[in-house]
Image (cartoon, rainbow, N blue to C red; front, top):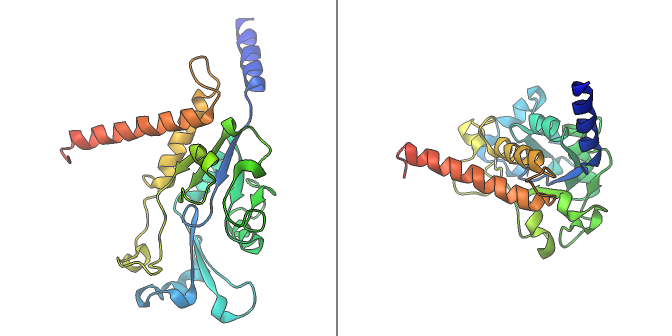
Length: 239
Protein backbone atom coordinates (compact mmCIF):
# COMPACT_ATOMS: atom_id res chain seq x y z
CA UNK A 1 0.00 0.00 0.00
CA UNK A 2 2.83 2.39 0.93
CA UNK A 3 4.59 1.73 -2.38
CA UNK A 4 1.37 2.54 -4.27
CA UNK A 5 1.11 5.86 -2.42
CA UNK A 6 4.71 6.72 -3.30
CA UNK A 7 4.10 5.84 -6.94
CA UNK A 8 0.97 8.01 -6.99
CA UNK A 9 2.82 10.96 -5.43
CA UNK A 10 5.63 10.54 -7.98
CA UNK A 11 3.05 10.50 -10.80
CA UNK A 12 1.37 13.68 -9.51
CA UNK A 13 4.72 15.45 -9.10
CA UNK A 14 5.66 14.64 -12.68
CA UNK A 15 2.27 15.79 -13.95
CA UNK A 16 2.65 19.14 -12.18
CA UNK A 17 6.20 19.73 -13.39
CA UNK A 18 6.14 21.96 -16.49
CA UNK A 19 8.01 20.91 -19.61
CA UNK A 20 11.39 22.59 -19.88
CA UNK A 21 12.83 23.92 -23.13
CA UNK A 22 16.34 23.81 -24.62
CA UNK A 23 17.31 26.10 -27.51
CA UNK A 24 20.45 25.05 -29.40
CA UNK A 25 22.60 27.00 -31.81
CA UNK A 26 24.27 25.13 -34.69
CA UNK A 27 27.52 26.72 -35.90
CA UNK A 28 30.43 26.49 -33.43
CA UNK A 29 28.02 24.96 -30.89
CA UNK A 30 27.08 21.60 -32.42
CA UNK A 31 29.08 21.74 -35.66
CA UNK A 32 31.80 23.59 -37.55
CA UNK A 33 31.29 24.29 -41.25
CA UNK A 34 33.86 25.49 -43.78
CA UNK A 35 33.97 25.81 -47.57
CA UNK A 36 36.21 23.20 -49.20
CA UNK A 37 38.04 26.04 -50.95
CA UNK A 38 38.98 27.46 -47.53
CA UNK A 39 40.65 24.33 -46.20
CA UNK A 40 44.31 24.86 -45.39
CA UNK A 41 46.88 22.73 -47.19
CA UNK A 42 47.26 20.54 -44.11
CA UNK A 43 43.49 20.02 -43.91
CA UNK A 44 42.92 18.88 -47.49
CA UNK A 45 43.45 15.24 -46.50
CA UNK A 46 39.91 15.44 -45.09
CA UNK A 47 38.45 15.58 -48.60
CA UNK A 48 39.44 11.93 -49.07
CA UNK A 49 38.06 10.92 -45.67
CA UNK A 50 34.58 12.41 -45.96
CA UNK A 51 32.90 9.33 -47.45
CA UNK A 52 34.23 7.00 -44.75
CA UNK A 53 33.61 9.26 -41.75
CA UNK A 54 30.60 9.21 -39.42
CA UNK A 55 31.02 12.81 -38.27
CA UNK A 56 32.22 14.59 -41.41
CA UNK A 57 30.17 15.41 -44.52
CA UNK A 58 30.71 17.18 -47.82
CA UNK A 59 27.64 19.13 -48.89
CA UNK A 60 26.55 20.94 -52.05
CA UNK A 61 23.17 22.66 -52.28
CA UNK A 62 23.34 24.24 -55.75
CA UNK A 63 25.48 21.85 -57.88
CA UNK A 64 28.25 24.44 -58.18
CA UNK A 65 31.39 22.66 -56.95
CA UNK A 66 32.94 25.95 -55.84
CA UNK A 67 30.20 26.14 -53.20
CA UNK A 68 30.95 22.75 -51.66
CA UNK A 69 31.39 22.86 -47.91
CA UNK A 70 32.35 20.39 -45.20
CA UNK A 71 30.43 19.97 -41.95
CA UNK A 72 32.18 18.53 -38.91
CA UNK A 73 30.12 17.26 -35.99
CA UNK A 74 31.32 18.30 -32.55
CA UNK A 75 32.34 15.34 -30.37
CA UNK A 76 29.58 14.16 -27.99
CA UNK A 77 26.70 15.65 -30.02
CA UNK A 78 24.96 12.28 -30.46
CA UNK A 79 25.09 11.49 -26.75
CA UNK A 80 24.10 15.05 -25.88
CA UNK A 81 21.00 14.92 -28.07
CA UNK A 82 19.92 11.57 -26.68
CA UNK A 83 20.32 12.60 -23.04
CA UNK A 84 18.97 16.16 -23.35
CA UNK A 85 15.90 14.88 -25.18
CA UNK A 86 14.86 13.00 -22.03
CA UNK A 87 14.67 16.26 -20.09
CA UNK A 88 13.79 19.01 -22.56
CA UNK A 89 11.79 19.93 -25.62
CA UNK A 90 14.59 20.89 -27.99
CA UNK A 91 14.76 23.62 -30.63
CA UNK A 92 17.34 24.68 -33.21
CA UNK A 93 17.94 28.42 -33.56
CA UNK A 94 20.44 29.49 -36.22
CA UNK A 95 21.36 32.66 -38.06
CA UNK A 96 21.78 30.46 -41.13
CA UNK A 97 18.97 30.19 -43.67
CA UNK A 98 16.29 27.49 -43.66
CA UNK A 99 17.95 25.49 -46.45
CA UNK A 100 21.19 25.27 -44.48
CA UNK A 101 19.36 24.40 -41.26
CA UNK A 102 17.46 21.57 -42.94
CA UNK A 103 20.69 20.25 -44.47
CA UNK A 104 22.34 20.12 -41.05
CA UNK A 105 19.27 18.52 -39.45
CA UNK A 106 19.23 15.85 -42.16
CA UNK A 107 22.68 14.90 -40.91
CA UNK A 108 22.35 15.19 -37.13
CA UNK A 109 18.66 14.30 -36.73
CA UNK A 110 17.52 12.62 -39.98
CA UNK A 111 14.33 11.16 -38.51
CA UNK A 112 13.50 14.37 -36.62
CA UNK A 113 13.42 12.44 -33.35
CA UNK A 114 14.82 15.33 -31.35
CA UNK A 115 13.79 18.57 -33.06
CA UNK A 116 10.76 17.66 -35.22
CA UNK A 117 9.88 21.00 -36.90
CA UNK A 118 11.10 23.24 -34.08
CA UNK A 119 13.59 25.23 -36.15
CA UNK A 120 14.07 29.01 -36.19
CA UNK A 121 16.28 30.49 -38.92
CA UNK A 122 17.57 33.73 -40.41
CA UNK A 123 14.34 34.28 -42.35
CA UNK A 124 12.35 34.63 -39.11
CA UNK A 125 15.02 36.50 -37.19
CA UNK A 126 17.50 38.32 -39.48
CA UNK A 127 19.07 40.70 -36.96
CA UNK A 128 18.88 39.30 -33.42
CA UNK A 129 17.90 35.99 -31.91
CA UNK A 130 14.91 36.29 -29.62
CA UNK A 131 12.83 33.93 -27.50
CA UNK A 132 9.73 35.81 -28.66
CA UNK A 133 9.45 33.14 -31.37
CA UNK A 134 8.80 30.51 -28.69
CA UNK A 135 5.32 30.58 -27.19
CA UNK A 136 6.56 29.41 -23.79
CA UNK A 137 7.35 30.84 -20.36
CA UNK A 138 10.91 32.23 -20.45
CA UNK A 139 11.51 30.89 -16.96
CA UNK A 140 11.42 27.37 -18.41
CA UNK A 141 13.93 28.02 -21.22
CA UNK A 142 17.70 27.59 -21.43
CA UNK A 143 19.78 28.57 -24.46
CA UNK A 144 23.08 26.91 -25.38
CA UNK A 145 25.01 29.13 -27.79
CA UNK A 146 28.64 30.14 -28.32
CA UNK A 147 27.84 33.81 -29.04
CA UNK A 148 26.22 36.07 -26.46
CA UNK A 149 26.01 39.13 -28.71
CA UNK A 150 23.49 37.64 -31.16
CA UNK A 151 20.76 37.44 -28.51
CA UNK A 152 18.27 40.15 -27.61
CA UNK A 153 19.24 41.86 -24.36
CA UNK A 154 16.18 40.54 -22.50
CA UNK A 155 17.06 36.93 -23.35
CA UNK A 156 20.73 36.91 -22.35
CA UNK A 157 19.85 35.73 -18.84
CA UNK A 158 18.61 32.48 -20.43
CA UNK A 159 21.99 31.84 -22.04
CA UNK A 160 24.38 29.09 -21.02
CA UNK A 161 27.37 30.10 -23.11
CA UNK A 162 29.50 27.31 -24.53
CA UNK A 163 33.09 27.49 -25.79
CA UNK A 164 33.28 27.87 -29.56
CA UNK A 165 34.05 24.70 -31.48
CA UNK A 166 36.74 25.25 -34.12
CA UNK A 167 37.75 22.08 -35.95
CA UNK A 168 39.06 23.77 -39.10
CA UNK A 169 41.63 26.56 -39.25
CA UNK A 170 39.12 28.84 -40.99
CA UNK A 171 41.40 31.89 -41.00
CA UNK A 172 42.73 31.46 -37.46
CA UNK A 173 46.43 31.98 -36.69
CA UNK A 174 46.92 28.86 -34.61
CA UNK A 175 46.89 25.25 -35.82
CA UNK A 176 43.46 23.64 -36.03
CA UNK A 177 42.30 20.32 -34.63
CA UNK A 178 42.15 19.08 -38.22
CA UNK A 179 45.75 20.06 -38.90
CA UNK A 180 46.86 18.34 -35.71
CA UNK A 181 44.67 15.33 -36.55
CA UNK A 182 43.07 15.61 -33.14
CA UNK A 183 39.71 16.71 -31.78
CA UNK A 184 37.98 18.09 -28.71
CA UNK A 185 37.59 15.56 -25.90
CA UNK A 186 34.34 13.63 -26.10
CA UNK A 187 33.98 12.94 -22.38
CA UNK A 188 35.58 16.11 -20.99
CA UNK A 189 34.74 18.61 -23.73
CA UNK A 190 32.35 21.54 -23.58
CA UNK A 191 29.19 19.67 -24.58
CA UNK A 192 29.73 17.04 -21.91
CA UNK A 193 30.18 19.76 -19.29
CA UNK A 194 27.09 21.64 -20.47
CA UNK A 195 25.03 18.45 -20.25
CA UNK A 196 26.05 18.01 -16.61
CA UNK A 197 24.86 21.54 -15.80
CA UNK A 198 21.57 20.96 -17.63
CA UNK A 199 20.97 17.73 -15.72
CA UNK A 200 21.80 19.39 -12.39
CA UNK A 201 19.42 22.28 -13.04
CA UNK A 202 16.64 20.03 -14.30
CA UNK A 203 16.83 17.85 -11.18
CA UNK A 204 16.35 20.92 -8.95
CA UNK A 205 13.58 22.59 -10.93
CA UNK A 206 10.35 22.90 -8.98
CA UNK A 207 11.58 20.87 -6.01
CA UNK A 208 10.81 21.94 -2.45
CA UNK A 209 14.01 23.93 -1.99
CA UNK A 210 14.59 24.55 -5.67
CA UNK A 211 13.26 27.21 -7.99
CA UNK A 212 10.70 27.40 -10.76
CA UNK A 213 12.98 29.71 -12.71
CA UNK A 214 15.38 27.62 -14.80
CA UNK A 215 17.56 30.68 -15.45
CA UNK A 216 18.43 30.97 -11.76
CA UNK A 217 19.14 27.25 -11.46
CA UNK A 218 21.35 27.16 -14.55
CA UNK A 219 23.44 30.03 -13.20
CA UNK A 220 23.66 28.37 -9.77
CA UNK A 221 24.69 24.98 -11.20
CA UNK A 222 27.20 26.56 -13.58
CA UNK A 223 28.87 28.49 -10.76
CA UNK A 224 28.90 25.43 -8.51
CA UNK A 225 30.62 23.25 -11.11
CA UNK A 226 33.03 26.06 -11.95
CA UNK A 227 34.02 26.37 -8.28
CA UNK A 228 34.54 22.61 -8.01
CA UNK A 229 36.79 22.73 -11.07
CA UNK A 230 38.85 25.59 -9.65
CA UNK A 231 39.18 23.76 -6.33
CA UNK A 232 40.49 20.71 -8.19
CA UNK A 233 43.06 22.82 -10.02
CA UNK A 234 44.25 24.27 -6.71
CA UNK A 235 44.60 20.77 -5.24
CA UNK A 236 46.75 19.84 -8.23
CA UNK A 237 48.87 22.96 -7.58
CA UNK A 238 48.13 24.35 -11.03
CA UNK A 239 47.51 27.77 -9.45
